[in-house]
Image (cartoon, rainbow, N blue to C red; front, side, top):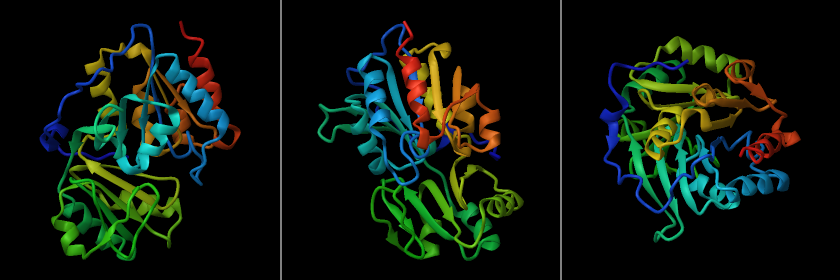
Length: 292
């Protein structure tokens, strides 16, 4: 469902600080990439004790656990802390932001890559077809602009209400669209009919749309990390449940879909585990611990 122009994602990149830090991937250990909502936590944001302890065990065993989420950075940091990751990396905003985690840094983390785009063409196209939808933009400075008092826990902070005109002028990391008047299928059909160009997009399990720069996905940012950390391709594992996880699940040597995932997500995966309410991720994390 992704549409992109001929423009390379790197054309949108804010210069990165580089990987830096003291984190070194250990030979023989896996790169374990985990979605948050619907995978690590349920749709109410609750992480079970079994998932928490299993994830902490994988971190403690030396595997590189990388949270890969559609959430913005502020909404991702509590998850990273819960997993006990003190040195490592996370991919936020569906690949738009890559973060180095280091508790010795003043803030405990730093953004090392941020992919931005001009949201105006997508906003114009979407507003014509979905005039009553709610819109929000994650800006290149980490803030949020929104219409109609649009707030969501995935933002991690309070969005500032503004005009559609100001949103068109913003430099965006992520554009989010939500409609309370449509089902997921209706919303997906409407978005598909718009024919967005020059961006990457995915429709969520509800009437929810995430838009990023062309070619930017969780998988694209994870591949950049994998390459720089010199992790062999065969040592990658990913688990997720949403359409924004499709590329990541195909990218990983072992892609695992959660039991409640849509059929297209399951078909893109190598295997399917239990649902988030059944702590399906625990089975996957436990199997990681058996890797020598």
